[in-house]
Length: 485
Image 1 (cartoon, rainbow, N blue to C red):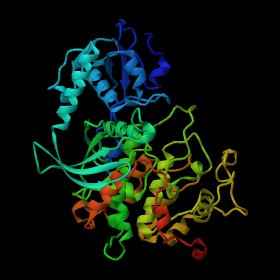
Image 2: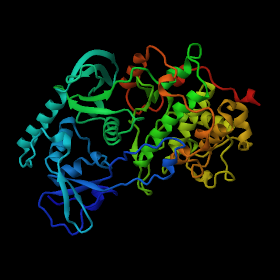
Image 3: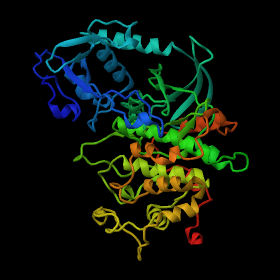
Image 4: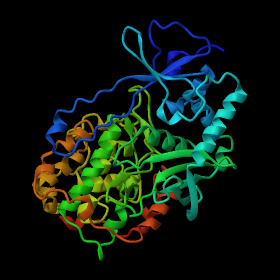
């Protein structure tokens, strides 16, 4: 079999220069996640100089690399790996060591990942041996957990309460993804995306993937941390029983901002930020969930779909059909979550894409060539006449005054129409709002609501990456911009 060319391995992958060729082997490089978590307004944040060393796996056959690029980068459209194939890839990967190199190609440290210490470490040469190793890995992972009662069932997945066998007090959520009829020969793309990115991202404000295994019926099981306190939407909507202030909002926004900062630092776009994708852990920590629409930052010349992000939180560039965009799409969504936390009702809630654009024009200003050069060239650009001028910062202060002058300044920068001028996740964490009074509430003192388990189960059992759900049809409380003056 011919070895794959460089384009097959994606733009971030390369074969080590000057290395002696080895038959049947190919080296795949990847960028590891950053371990450091800066706090908003901290002096150490400005001094942050993250190190990003290159590491690589050597896997056994070029066919595996070409077929399973989802583990490391872009996916050929006609390839859909199955659960068993995915486990085979893992088996092939761990049986070759992780090797770190210097520029002079001298091998410094050859080791296997620590979680493979109980597995066979001799290279797998035959298909039968690989299958055996994959089955051993799967059984070892499955036997770590005890599956308890079913918490909920949906068309996409069933959710079970589980626990670690080694520590029964440690509860987990086991999400059993059902085989989808339209993907009879493999896993659905949104399940692949969710699995891929949760494996690569480890952060206090991102839901943790603790394990993966397949069941006898070939369904994929994701073992996730159990988050019993529901989601942020549940708190926002319960205006009768849940009361919170600026300090609480600042705490929640800090957690969300750190989570999305970490995604962007690791070249991942979430593309579906909204309150019911922000789950709450038992210690009060907010966790970003649902990576079914997430993707790695694309090559500048490679178009992406504009049909992402739930309509109410979708930025104008996507509503206008932009196929090339950046992390600014997530920042717009973060800004609308911020606004919703303050006023406790969705800020821009359109019934259709056209209606959404009209509401954006009323709430922020009409996108024009004057405030956004080049916008009229976007394929689906259309606005109503006459154009509404972009609102000054005093407008936000009049409606979101509880956030204070600095909070309104931050919100207005998140909702800048031109994505090139919109504030970045790093700049959000450097903003002066975090240092202003009041200080963020401590996690233990944040408002909580009972019955959160039901909300979390509803979030987990739905199909990841659903752009518009029933929620948009059920919520009647929407802003009347005409009455706002």
